[in-house]
Picture (cartoon, rainbow, N blue to C red):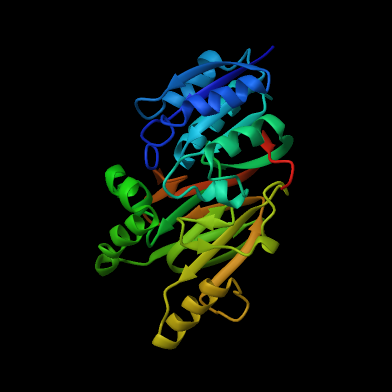
Length: 298
């Protein structure tokens, strides 16, 4: 028999993970796995569980939201493991899971972990801190970590939108100088995201044709401050269609290494959790950092 470490966040999303745990474990057991189940109670638990109990396992399974997955993947990296990692999404937005087209039905997602194929998946490094799919600053980025969990559980994506609207009146552009694989530029930006995902915050969608989550590259999306109502309309249209070519306010590119320079420390959202960037911040791609279990039909 093979062994699996199952890490569960019972507070994620609509708190349905615990209700479905029995079906998930039966599915994994029928797939030949003897499971050890550990439940998180606070931030950092999932990473520590991997470090303490993941080294001798044949499979590690995360049940929770994107933040829980971030912690589990960080533990895998920190421990230097090549153990396959399966993800059963149970969060309120599941940006990362949706980018990978993972099933929202937990029993189906568990079966996909049993039957799936292991593929290399990139991660990012934010000043040495790993992230799974996005590091963002500016407009709406704060909402991912400031929105109360109870509100996320009740309203899902709408909770992020409502929370973000509160900050619009106080929104200030951020002056940044950026280098991306040697290309340099600067401006005042309302929003920026470095991602390895097609979905950010449940609201922003990148064209899948422009995103390969295993190509050794991260995608950079920057929105500078619109100077007129016309430019604002162009931004909204470009974000809605995913076509950025005709919008002067948006810069979109892919790069292996990015350096951000600012006059003051800037708050970022790292896979939905708060992170403070230094005045000189390096973000790099970690190619093939995770051996991820993907559904065979994806």
